Length: 283
Image: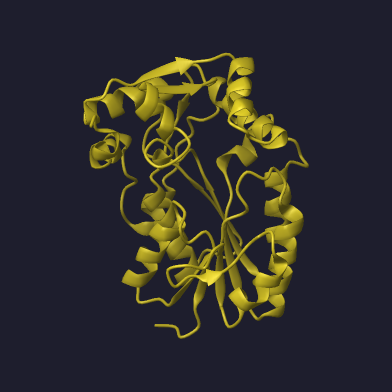
């Protein structure tokens, strides 16, 4: 066991809290970071740079989850990585998105700028590019409409996505943080097969016994829905670009990253749905 800790940003998030479990099983010391610093977590707030140095002090590596709902957080990420280098951090594993490589992604998009900041940080870096999280249906932005209306609304049409389990992403991150062979690597992480959102809704209905359908909205209608939910305009446009790409067939790529890096197969969406069925159960 290494005495110097690994700083896990987003420690209460989908991948962060699962990463903590993977690191614990490996006997690794983790420093949990969250905005409120409750529950034994160290205080870390992307919007308060004064929290950077104390969170990083003595850490040897960082799991970096960029600020949520900000289209281009590259300036603050670069400032954080600069502080990480000054604090003696050796390596960073950064969570990005498969959407970075979609054909409509601008060269100066926020996601590409964040990846550029990671590569230019002077640290040993690894970038993770997962596809859509399976957990978006069970603990993310798609859950409220499933529970309230039995619906999943997207502008993806019949386009498919190789949904990936957040625990598989965390497993790859744990390997990248603790094993050799991942320096300056970009890992594209997918599930084992691609499903349309309609097929995902069917799997959830089958597992939970709740009627769930996919509402295929036009791009404009999806934009209005996200706007009404209070999503910032630039971030909303990024989401719509991703949905355009999925609708056009660019979400179906499969990789063997999970199996190759962790030594176990990626979790299938049906298995995820069966395990999460109680979340959607009618009460």
